[in-house]
Image (cartoon, rainbow, N blue to C red):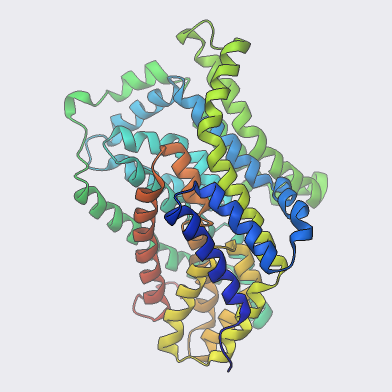
Length: 456
């Protein structure tokens, strides 16, 4: 086997560029991402396609959804809607140390499993959970990374679409050997370990940061919060109900009536229009705060100020998508997969190397792309050294899609959470690395057979 493949050098060049401009020159992260994007086009000889790659993310529905939900979060911050929702949450969990964090962990995990997207779920649920955590003395960076880690579980827990992609890899290699139901149970068995890991990590963080329960005299009564803020409590329903309807009836009832393409368009419409409807409803129910709430001048000033908070996050996400498209078209993943196959690692080496590799790739490639490019090679390589095929395929979403949203510089889930929490890049990145490290450790322990999977 010869030296390092040139594709790996591409990734190192991108990482080095971002480090130089962001860490050493202290430029904003979105500038560093843009410069990295241009550098990659130059290295790959694709500068003549600059415009095409720059425009391409504008066709991605999820990008617009993230921006829309960030705008909704800002509107929440300008009204009393979130404060009413937070009061209701505090009335239930305020007496527990870090209670709002556990609410974020459980609710965001559940909702992300329905949507199948970590960044989109951060934008949708983080507008409630992150302010609630900050209100209960969570540092903004910790609140952001708790929501990030919880939402990043979505791609690896059924019924996420990433699960179907991973099963497709297994069924391609072993056609007709394994059932979807058996595969889902195995994925759930793996997911339970990661949920437990996040609960334990959150518990330790709450102790380290001395997150205290809310003083009993500051905890509102549940009935009082319901009486005062019942209109605000309908906002989560407005956001989550359309997503649930799309998940529940999209593959059957909606598809039967308007076809697969129509159902796909319906899903895209739901994720885009939902934050707009929620924003209008929020402004309407907050009219009592000020008579000028819905005036054109007031709305203009509100969104003018919002741009200062939303634009940097949106630009970072946008250029991250640009980079991932460039690498995808350059077949970087396929070349690296072939290189790994040639390394002929032992089982012990492989169960450590594979999660580290996918963590590294998660800095640049979406989880679904990793599974599509590397899935067969990863499963085949793990099976060759004695790993159960069902386990090898079921771990794919955990080491690709779940990691992708947390690992900078792609880290779309982290950026979305930062935009809501208004946390600093340095502090948030450091805490994100802790969540990544413990997630990586559990991945290795599961693959190595040290953590039993009860449904396997």
